[in-house]
Length: 355
Image 1: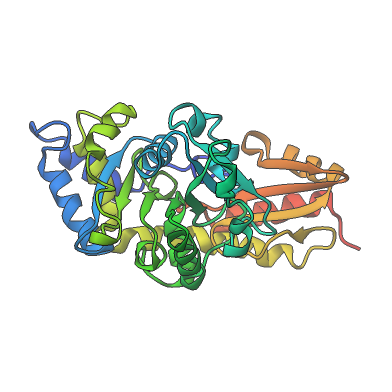
Image 2: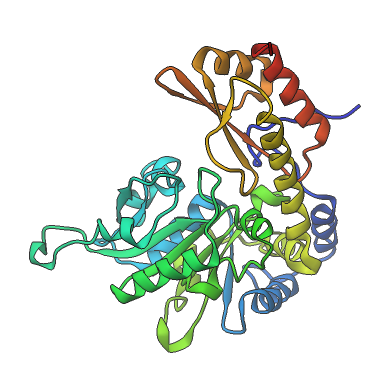
């Protein structure tokens, strides 16, 4: 009997068999601790092949710690980070960037969850106001965004140029980088570090691993020297250093090796696109954003949205009331199936009977 599945979040899916097999293989015998093991050395090689010969990768334990530790390496506590108001940094990580990194978040209103140089420029401080303002040091973007939209390589490059021209650095929250890159038909680096991202939070949890993420420093030499220097100590101080690191490293390696990350992300994206295509034929529901990765936002009358969510039972999706409209978020996972899409359609038709 199949275990139940839903579209609450790609965090709810299990791990891919190849990842579990890699972890079981890494479980044989004893290995060096805190990263002095063969699996972590192998991950270093794969990261340089994926992100460039100067790239440095640091396995981490979770997404919040990965983002906050990355920002701690990029800015001092009295400085600020420009991000979208909808950014995970601002909405879903409590006050961790402020409490742990000591950084002020400068949230920007965006039409689609994505920053532009023009939007980010509105948060630049006037030097005449120093020392009374937090000076922006980092621009942080999410790829894909929390609204499921995706930055093109050209849009990433434009933000990188803007940041660098104003003495700032570009950070990317890549919790769903794999889905964004797969949707664009490009590689992980082309969707991030190849186009000016200085520090990347590389997500794996949402794409088939058990746990673990990574910080990737682009390492463009004299352009941004020393960002990774001392990060091994900073990682420890950010509570993100695990003694049996081989179990994190081997999962990340499994994703990078032979492009497993792409095949898993493509499947999640395919399911999200199928939902979007189906919704287009149902009266009374509209897509709030184009489906560009593995996230679908659909809008319907609030009472209908609540009725739909109730039908989902234990897999009740996120519902955002906006006046008399309910915004429902559905997220495809690597193990989602077309019959799950059929169930979404059936539930929508149950609450939105067609004439």
